[in-house]
Image (tube, rainbow, N blue to C red):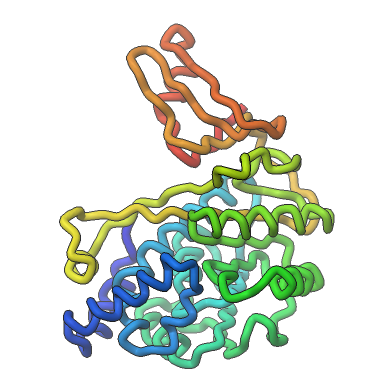
Length: 323
C-alpha cells in the first residue's frame, strides 16, 4: 500500500523547505514520543516535527486507517459513507484514507485543535477536489464542535492524551449525535490495546453493536498477558527511507482498533477473525482465530479438504474467515 500520488507529491513539495538533517532530528523525537505512547498532537505544535510526521508517520497511519475502513466495508457490505467526521484529524490522514475506501464520499468535517496542522492539511489537499471542499473546525475534542451528524466518525491515534474519564465523556457525546458508526484506532501496543479493550467494554454496556474486528458481542477472550493487534504494510517513499535510514522499501504498522454501531446492523456472517499469521505447512494450514462463539482457538485445515484448504491458503493476519 502507498499514499495517493497527489498526496505524496504535496508532501514532497512542502518538506523541501527543511534540510534532511533537521527532518531526521525531528523524526527521532516523533518516534520517541510514539514509543512512549504519546499522541501525535504533540508533533503538530512544532513545524519541523510536523513535516517529519508527514514524511514518516503519515504513510503508516494512512495504511492503518485504510485497513480499518476495509474491515468495516467487508463486515457491513451495505454501508455507504457519504459523510465523514475526522476527530483529532491532524493534517487529515484518516480523511485521505476514507476517500480511498469509500466511493461516493463527498462531505468531510475535520476537527483539529492545532492551527498549524489545519494549515498544512489544507495545503496537502490542493490536488484533491473533495478535500478542498472539506470543512475544518479548530477545536479540542473536549469542546463542542458544530457537527451533529455523519455516516461515520473516526478517532485515529488520539486517545493517548485523554484519561478514561475524559475518554468516556467523549464517547458519551458521540452517542448523543447522529453518528451511527464510530471507528477508533490506536497503536498496536499493549497500552494501545488496553485502551481499545476499555472502549469495547464501555460501548457494549451502552448497548452498542461491535462490527469489527471482533466477530462476536461477547467479552473479549484475549488474555491479560497478550494483546489484539493487526498489521498494515506501507511502501516507503524515497524521503521516507532517507529519514528512517532504512534499507527496506516498506514498513509494517501495527495497530489495534474497534468499530461499533449505536444500533444493530445486519452483519455479514463470519466464523472468526484471524488474530495471528496462519502457519502454512506442507498440506495443512493452522489458523489462530478469535471465533464467533467468543473464544480464541486454532483450527487446522488440511489439503484433503480441497475447497476450505484453498480458502485457508489465502488467509492472512487480520482476515475475516467467512462461514
